Figure (cartoon, rainbow, N blue to C red):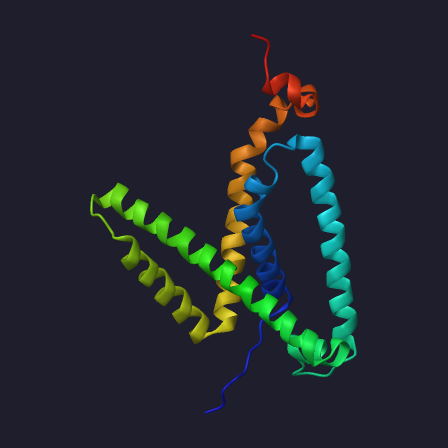
Length: 189
């Protein structure tokens, strides 16, 4: 019996990156952009997008100079030295921890509330955290290809749902309300 080894393709990798960017933004943008209104948020998001693009291009450039099997740890150790490799490793671990925490707590809260709403059964938060952790961990353990495919389906569904939900609102956007933030936020009494 010959086992065919498959690797995730460009589409799966792209969708994983898109899911990471959307996920991080979904949790942080409403809080980070509160109070600076549309013009300020647009400028900040544009600058952040440019920095992310440049950072991604730099990582691609570094990747091109290393062979297969090289990791982020290899890059930082070679380019920055052992001490900075430790600092970058701790920062990288912290980011992974925060994202894991955010996804597990967010998903478990949604599952707990959905189960209670549709079945009337109260699902304790600890149990929903365990369910989400085991489910996602099992999928990731089984196959990274499966993770990529599930992510692709979910991201496509998210884009379709987003445009179906908000496409009708585009005709109701008024530039004056977006730009004149103080006048609309503090109406005359």
